[in-house]
View (cartoon, helix red, strand yellow):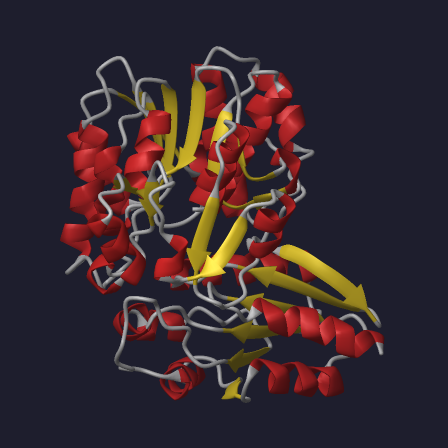
Length: 415
């Protein structure tokens, strides 16, 4: 939603918004764009509004603003519908998959920008090299991060699709792997015959999905990795860069220049982001919230840092995902030396607590006995400052608000 707000602001529209009062890393982006965000209230709804775009993260039946706008007969569309309006009937590139879509979208948008293509880009994180969560361009090229949750993919009709992965996720919406894969199958089936699907074929679920495609398919994986040197760690990011270079070639652009540009790519906010260093302790933050993502993150960190002690601070996102993938979470932290587990960050759609931090601690300790629950964000930051030493690495992991542990820890270390 933040990226979309930026696009409309740069189109010359008057943009404002409503949200919960929690802190998000996107708050700074909105403030810099002078986009005002107020707490949810019917007072925010008036007939002066030409269009209301609503997030599908909330149950609209329970939204006071949604009901007020409906009563006032204000035109309303959902976020994915609005994003589809930007993408469709353009030279659209959609990056989808369980993992890697934010980084891959950011990489592609940055490369196209540096190649002078002036693309429009909408991505799910702040990218300093793009100027925020989004970039508005005047060319016909539009690149979006396409989320599969709630089958938002049905609103998008791109010319090129990059499919990075298809590990089961969002169990609150999809019943099983078959239901999850089905939305991707329907999506790739829509790619026009003269379009292109670029897919990570080392993933068996992806190999099954691409059978539904009616367009040309280019597969990539470990056997076809391109020689790309990156600033961001992890072999999975070399896979992401390989997909980007394949898309660049398809668009008729120079791959050699694109490869050089990728060497300058510094990554996305909350994707192995270095928050700072104090007393010789390096503090990173990463949005990884699926067991596969966490495992790859820590594997990359272990390769990068060798025998240095890695302290992981994990906050799982949503009770449904935590419960469904509990045993997978248990095996995801083997490359960390110590794991602190925070309370589960519940989704806006969830009411009942079905699993907790204590369940995660037990699952992790079955495979690598080094996990513990250590209280609130403030308590964890206060504890860490007493145990970390010069040369150690702290990584906050998850899609919730545990990034605050890292920022608070740095403040504690500097005092």
